[in-house]
Image (tube, rainbow, N blue to C red; front, side, top):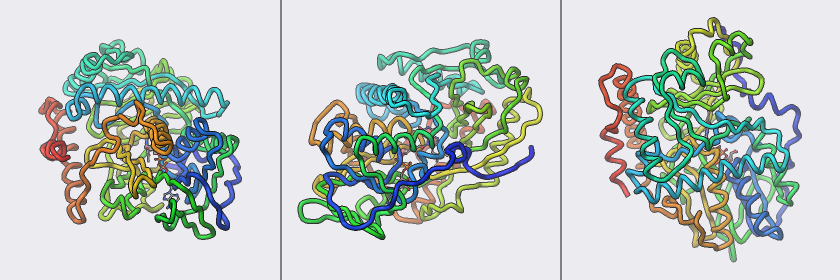
Length: 461
Ligand SMILES: Cc1cc2nc3c(=O)[nH]c(=O)nc-3n(C[C@H](O)[C@H](O)[C@H](O)COP(=O)(O)OP(=O)(O)OC[C@H]3O[C@@H](n4cnc5c(N)ncnc54)[C@H](O)[C@@H]3O)c2cc1C
């Protein structure tokens, strides 16, 4: 297992690109959006679609593909909470079904937008395959299928071992569950394509423009960057893993790092040996899932297995690699597909995601409705950020819609406590979840009982 580099594959595929110029000077706008990832860009696009005359400005600290939106696994999928079963258990069948349908609609709308606008995001609408590698995981996917059926959701199909291995062949697979509403994309190309589309629709996008202060001002808000200021009636806070840095949102979410490895392009013989028919995005049913997918240029991207919270929640390029997790990810891929033989890995990176105490997104408003926010997708935000864009648009436009009625919108979720309690709680939860994964592998845990700490968290408001 040779290891060659540490760059983000997706960024390499972007080619030369001139960033949008930073904000300079003072200007006014109707809406200022802080953060130029998917949440910020989809909000801008959907606002412009509904109200073309609205003056919308996006301020991005780095570039639009810098955050999780430019470095994720590229699964546009429906997942909210740990799984549908847990989500329905915590919020009720009607609420879970309603939220699931809103995100499934987003998967389809992302596909439609990408196709209609001709964005080369390497999108493949191939669906999700969830595989089970032990009996407890098998029980989980069967339970997931039953929950989907009970909620009246369509597009979920259980597969036996042979059916699963016919789609992707690993000797460890015992069964699988397919879900139609999932697409895989090149996430950085999607982010850049959305930014270009937003600019074409009249949105002002400024990169290299970190908002140092977002505060109330007469009649609205003022966002201050090193070289400029935007005065606007309304702001949208779309900074996801960085959201806890805003004083009003302190403790509402915590940044966790998740990591990925990527192989070199596989040979035809290697692809044939694993027979990845249908090119689904794939996850297993562990607590700390492995997520993996083929890339357009014939590699396997393989991520997950762990997620790390560090004391105080620092976000820094120094966290972009994690050697122990890299080694584990590489070894796990090789173990899952022994028929691949020798595999070389060319890329490894990670990035910050945003977790909330209830594992569902946090979407709402503060400062008397002058600032709306959406973050906390718990590592599954590609499609939900589009849903959040619809919700934030409706909030800015003062509309009550099906989307603003989603159960976690304006929900007073509990916050994380000050350190060291958040670190202790995060580490304890991580260890309990990992212990359950190991026990499920050994056949000592049915997989249906959440660790105590999660049950405690579920009791919180
Ligand atoms: C390694 C990894 C793999 C993942 N895989 C998947 C996956 O396969 N499927 C899935 O659904 N989800 C996945 N996710 C999660 C998903 O990428 C995120 O949920 C989603 O991209 C969130 O979008 P966002 O726009 O809210 O946040 P981000 O993309 O993080 O954007 C926030 C932006 O705000 C900017 N910002 C921060 N502070 C300021 C400031 N003060 N002023 C101006 N700008 C600021 C940042 O620079 C950043 O660009 C993954 C995440 C990671 C890290």
